[in-house]
Image (cartoon, rainbow, N blue to C red):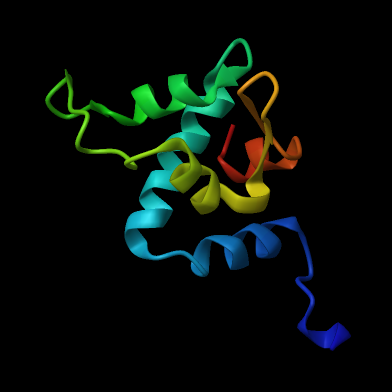
Length: 102
C-alpha cells in the first residue's frame, strides 16, 4: 500500500489529473490558469465567466464551459478550496501554482 503512494508533488498532481476525462482535464487546467494569475481571490462566478471566454476567437461563449459551478468544483476536486460563505475559490496549496508552471 505504501508503495502505491506518489513519490512527490508532481506525481500527486499527475495522478489527480489522470483520473479526469480529457474534457475535465482541459476545464481544470483553464480554471487553474485563472486562479494562478488572478491578483485577488476569485469568486466561483468569475471563474465560470473566465471559462466562457473563447481565447482563439476572443469572444464570450457561455456554452463552452461547465454548465454550473458545482460541476466545476467537482472537476477541480482537491486542487482547490471553496468557501461557500464568500463564494471564493482558492488553490488548495501553493504547490498547485508550481504544477501550473508559474
